[in-house]
Length: 415
Ligand code: NIG
Ligand code: FE
Image (cartoon, rainbow, N blue to C red; front, side, top):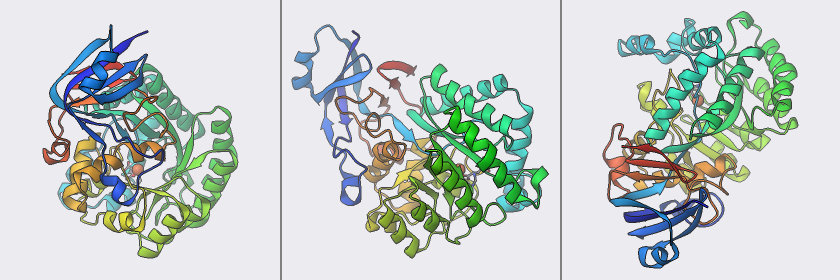
């Protein structure tokens, strides 16, 4: 048996608490153990407590000395577009000169330009690109991500992307939770025939993907000029009948009832929500849906309209923060950057931001039993940061790399 003893932390932020996502004032309860220590056995947390409680139980353990630094659970990123070819630095330059994200999309750029490059790439090339992205996530202290397909838009290319997502979970230390996002954009060859493309998604793609167990969730980009409510209902209902959980890109640029549909269909999460109206917040609360908020995408497209996180917390929603890592609207893998934006732009406290980036995110991926907090029985996914106090995580902004990252008790990053 391999046994690990973590000692000499400044704070061991455990996020221990009720076995469910945290709401209201619970979002500020981090269950911090000053100078805390932890034992992990074969990659699973065995004991957590003060150093004097824990050290005597840890005979023969390999000692990890945190050097008086902060230790937290690994971040859980509940919304990413991990697998794509190339990047869109060219469009970024155009946006810097005044073009908007939507104007670029309307001219055939945006998601479609990444689809062209991703379809042209072989599976091994995509695996190489995704491995590079996975390393960025791990270096920043993220140990679990949700990862969506959606830059293929043909059966073969969507399957290719989902297989790469699975391979990343097998060949790197980053845990991946796969989501099928075949309805991310209307493919060029289906221009003016979005309903026909939706039939391809529901009748051919979904059965194949469910059959090969390549996804746990299904998502759709429900937005003006992309997919409407009827089309979203068709895709999500079909996904549900195949046993997939539901997520939804909703209310990003326009609000026309997408989040209400997510509530009606019992989605697990509803993501973006920049334009969500108070009545829809109430519908999400009544349906027990977790909002996944993506401030990195608001920042990076140069918008100022962040989701109303305070109203959502007040309503009792178990909010989640995620990067939305993608080559267009949110080219960042940094959960610390997302937490910083949550605090400065959305008036979250650092504690609320950390809860939304760990335990609440884990529950939104059906991983609350194994990730998101440091409690006995859970995976030993933890991070030692170059900080003493958890509030420094969003306070120092920019891309800070973690000092050490452990996934299932194995060190995968050392700086
Ligand atoms: O979540 N909104 C749709 N999808 C992504 C953007 C994808 C892209 O621009 O490539 C998002 O923001
Ligand atoms: Fe997204």
